[in-house]
Amino acid sequence: MIVDDVRQATTGRYETRCVEESHDVIAEHYYDLRLDVPGRTEDFLTELSVAGLGALTVGGISFGTEVTIDFAQPHVYHVTVPLTGRFRCREGHGTTTYAAPGRAVFLRPEHGVRVDDWSADCRALSVKVDMPAVHERLEVLLGRSVRRPPHFEPYFDLSGGAGRSWFNLALWCLPEKDGPDGLLHRSLIRASIEQTLLEGLLLASGHSYRDALEAPVPAVRPATVRRVMEAVEERPAEHYDAARLAALSQVGVRALQEAFRKHVGMSPTAYVTEVRLRRVYEELRASGPTAVTVTEVAYRWGFAHLGRFAQRYRTRFGESPGQTLRSG
Image (cartoon, rainbow, N blue to C red; front, side, top):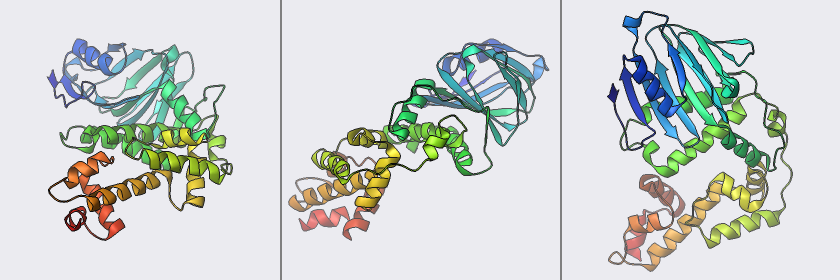
């Protein structure tokens, strides 16, 4: 077995011709399972590339020959897409679902999943998603609690729109995880990708709350916007994502975004960036080149990516951070 670990225990690349080792590495990242090889055993070769993103496990997997798989796991959803080849699966005692490229299969493995007719040329994207995380993101997007969990349709389309975007982002994670200095190894970026995949899944798939997500958002009072602005002004260096800003406002993500665009002329996260840029500018102007560095000031006010920070700073103030520091 070849293992290429990259900074995180939940991330790796595996190759093995041993069925027992295949079981072990798949169980480590996904589920305990039964793996049988009705195809040519001499062609059996498990290749697994996997990236752990908090509530999601994104992987690409192939076996080199025909296999059958049985697994069960409560409190998770599973989305799988053949990149090449085909397979079919059955959830519990339900009907058989046929999987082919261009269409994602949405599974709930609580009552068991049977995968068979896995073709020798099949390689699949396989995404495990924690169920509570999906429900939490749904409530954040709606701005209210939900009494019943969503009921998902068995397929969603990947040929365009939100489905295609979600699929491309999930695929991007697989080669990106292998770059030791890539964005996926930065905690803020990794958390942002996790959140985008969770929310994107709700916007790409069909489910019982889809109409509610597509409905016009209610109007939000300016006082609610001011409350968020005051919190950001008071503590601009803290971590703010869409969910936290919505929690501060006590309305949904979409409603807050619409209110900020209407009353402030920018999104809530863009406002956070604006406040941080102003604080950096003020500190650099008040300091001298021997007192601080641009890097330490940028980090202090929450900018983790210095290249992007410098570009935004120049756009906002018409000069580089270094020029501001020297003039101060």
